[in-house]
Length: 98
Image 1: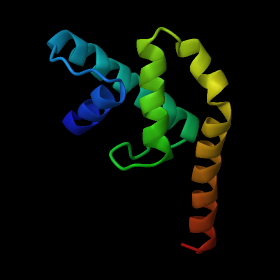
Image 2: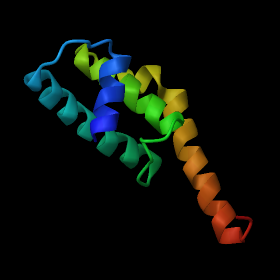
Image 3: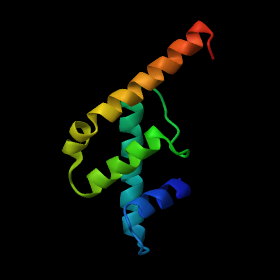
Image 4: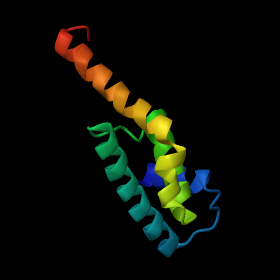
């Protein structure tokens, strides 16, 4: 979690050290992961660069700026693509392609 928190702090340009800010960001990160995992239909890897991590960073940006309700609207295409990617991977595994 420390690496992910550090990545979120960097993405949000938070350069100061503050325990309360870190606690708030940790909660936002956890809620964002739960939301994106639910949208995707399975747990995602947020440690590696990719679509899920990018969406999580943007989710944190929106929530920190009190704009959570706009995230799903503005990132609708990306959220659908995330879900479709999971479904495609699951189908490929069932068919023995992977």
